[in-house]
Amino acid sequence: MSTHTGYSDGVTLDYDAPRYDNGAAIGAYVRLKVASGLGSYSLSLSIDEARVLAEQLPVLVMAHDAAEHIAKGCGAAEFKAA
Image (cartoon, rainbow, N blue to C red; front, top):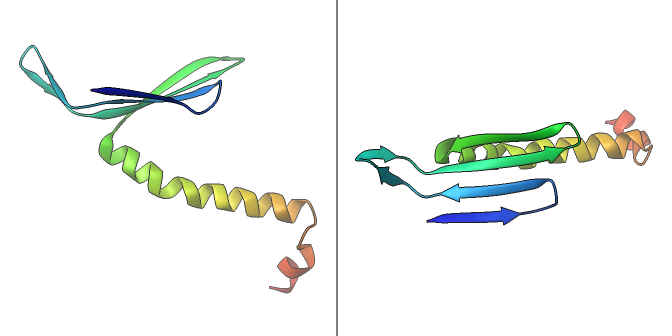
């Protein structure tokens, strides 16, 4: 079983279920593909690694959003007071 999801023009995710190839067990994995003006890149993650990324990614995105909010001056006074 394989699943493909395209979130944008430059980012796709593929899932490959565990399988046997010539008698050898191949574990499930997730492949992240990113295409940019500089080239295209691929990163394969085990399911455990994908779970760790899925848990940590929202925290990183929230930290980025907070930094952008502060940089725009929105809420800068609240940030200084804290």
